[in-house]
Amino acid sequence: MEEQTLVLIKPDGLKKSLTGNVLTRLSETKLDIVGAKIVKVSRPLAEEHYEALNKEPFFEDLIRYIMGEYHKKKVMALVYGGENAISKVREICGKTNPEEADAVSIRGAYGRITTAGVYENVMHASANPEDAEREIKLWFAPGEIIRDIYPTIDVEETVITKKWGEG
Ligand code: UDP
Ligand code: MG
Image (cartoon, rainbow, N blue to C red):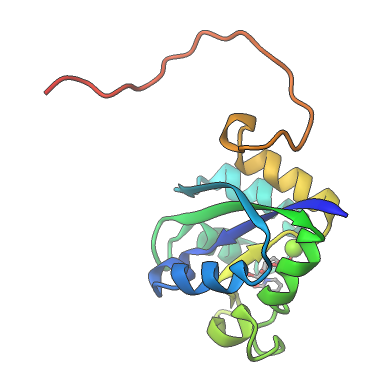
């Protein structure tokens, strides 16, 4: 089945210079990168992304972690598309708990558990098609993705946009 999935290289992955390693491992899937950017994660974005976990005892630490308060204040966000994209990426990603993850998976090779109990597991990968759609729509605008993956609507808006200035 043709699918899309959201990948985030989390702040620990960026701090540890693992971007190249993660992208190289993901290229084994032969999936297509259809969107990519560097994001400074705001609290509302972090809280919405992890809203299903907001009753968990580790929620506040998780929000701080994804906002980069323990590492670097940035995340690399990518959308991969192709046949069975979700399971292919999850497989290379490995289990949530880095100690349980297969040693050759990304999380198994590079993740750790902090003394506060948060799994610093280097990357995020959407778990199922519903999560993927919700997450991709949260992190990306339609114009940032080079394929029409979900229905869009045209809206006319007047916005203040930054352009390069003189000097
Ligand atoms: N997490 C954690 N402790 C847990 C469960 C989750 O620190 O007991 C963190 C971890 O960084 C994980 C994220 O919360 O990647 C989202 O959790 P989820 O259960 O959705 O796992 P994922 O889909 O990322 O494998
Ligand atoms: Mg999840």
